[in-house]
Each structure stands twice: as C-alpha cells, then as structure tokens.
Image 1 (tube, each protein chain N blue to C red):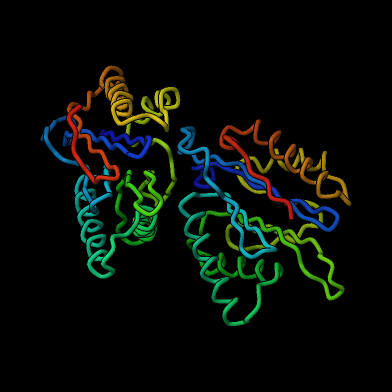
Image 2 (image 1 turned 90 degrees about the horizontal axis):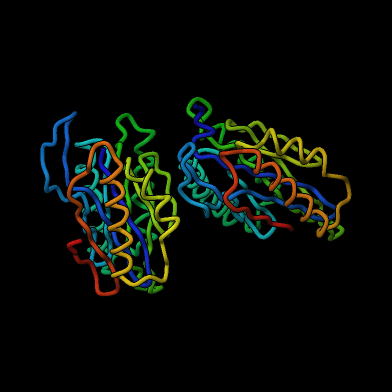
Length: 193
Length: 194
C-alpha cells in the first residue's frame, strides 16, 4: 500500500497548436472503496494557468489553498498576473520546502504564455512530489493511471493539434487509460485553453 | 467499530450515528451521543479513536461558537467544514495527530441548500450527497447508490436511512445497536426517533 495510491486519481496535460489542454478523473476513494465521484483535482490559478494535483487528497486541498495564497501575494507584490514559467518554479519551491516530509502530490500544470508579438505560446510542466520539474514539449501525465496514460498518450498524440482535435485526443487518452485503472475513473473533466 | 451515516434531501440533511461505546470486545455504554450540534444549522457526527473524538469535537464546538461571538453571524457550513478540515490536516503532521473521522452536515441559510461534508482523520474532505464512516460504510454506500434520492422528502429520507441501519444490523458481525438521528433543515436542528 503506497500513500500515493491511497485516494486514487490521475491527471494529464497536452500541448496543441496555440492551445493546451489539461484533464483529470473525478474519483476520490479510500483504497478500493469509492467515496466521491465529484472530487475536483484541477484548479484555475490565473486566467491562463490551470493546475492539476493528483495524489493524497488531504494534500490536494492543502496545496490548492497554499497556492491560492501564494499566487495572490505574488499578484499584489508584482502588480501583474504570474506567468506559467514563474508559477512552475513557485510550485517547485513550495514542494521542495517540504523535502524531508513531503506533500504526497505530483502536480501537473498547463498554461499559455503571452509573447511580445501578442500571440500565445502553450506551456505544460509536471513535477514529482519534492519539486523536480519536467518541462515537456508534448504531454505530461501523473497519478495512479500514469503508466497507462503514458502508453495511450504516446499512441494518440501528434504535433500541431487544433483545439477541437486536442480535446478529442486528451479525452480519449484519459478515458481509455482510466478504464484500465481501478483507482481512477468515476467521471472526468477536461479544460482546453 | 462505530458507524455513522448521513444523507441530504430536498432542503434537509439527516445524520445518524450509533450510540455504543466499546472497549475491546466489551460494550461499555449504550446511550452515547456522537453527534454534536455546532450551531443553529450545523451538525457534526464524529467517530474514531476513543478520547480523541470527544476532545476534538469539543475543541471544534467551542471554536465555532467563538467565531459566531466574534463576527455576530455563525460560520456557514462550507466555511465551518473548511476550518475543521484544516485543523485535522495540520494535526496530521503534528507530534500528536487526532484520529477522528467526521460527517459535517448543515443547512446553508445564504443559498437555502443542505450541505454535507465527508472528512477523515487525514484531513480529506469531500462534498457528497450521502456519506458514511466505519464498517457500516461498506454496506450503506452501495445501498445509498441504489436508493438515495436528492429530491426525497424528510419522511422518505428517514426511510432510506432506516434501510441502511437495518442492513448493517443484519449483516455486520458486531451489531452496532441503537442509533441517534438528527435532522437539520431551514428551521434548524432537531432530533428524531427512527
């Protein structure tokens, strides 16, 4: 019994052409017993950033509240919204603060960065439970179905997907991976930016 | 070994908890009230490690009361549940954590909706239409999947709860005995006999 698999749940994020998508299941369980089929693990951080927090459910809520606090403080001090790259490092340092008694969460981020030309550049990143960042160019996965998500995403994802096709790709990836994982499922949610 | 259940319906929430206090294989008491009334429209059923339960429940009770005295208005159910969750989550990573599982039920006077929160000793919180803790949850949850109706009247809700208690009494090796049942709706909190 691993503490990372105690409550179950999975998150996946993907890059498209000028767009990003992030999706998760909605299950909250106590090992094999399902408790809730409406447990959100993806949270909006700014208008251009979403954060997914799969892992131990108590830490999902605690970290959600902690990031809300820290992003609010950043916004007030800097008098501007936080950029996805800066937010990824905020996530990393927040987790590394607890290096020897970690939060049992593997965060997944998706966002859009505004370029000087005015167009938006897609951004995704994932981290382990102590804040080691992974800036991927294609897709990132985390949670109890991560091994299955890797396989399906590897098969379905392709570069340059338009928003509609990206939605279909990420939805099918999540749904098919989650169907092979007893600890994930019970509904799903997809966000496309 | 204690079991507690809660359901929401049309404009109300019902909470039920068994009334036995046991130590090892011996039943020590039959009439313990394990549902605290935290305010005019807020209930909390607690179970878990004996000692921790009452200690934590009284700590919550006094702090919810303090919030009401300070702010004139009582904490609405979502705020109260968030505060309680945070206390458990912080306690989990302290030197002496509380092992207490809770069902927090209330009627939100600002949205005119019943609210139910499932909270465990880790500080895991879920908003749910029905919930259970303890061995009873293994029987009651699947039964409620079949029979729970969010539009049911109080009478129908109590009948559904009766089914849960009957099922647990029938199938669980150790019968929980008597249950205390409390209802919260727009008129406040009241105790009912099943």
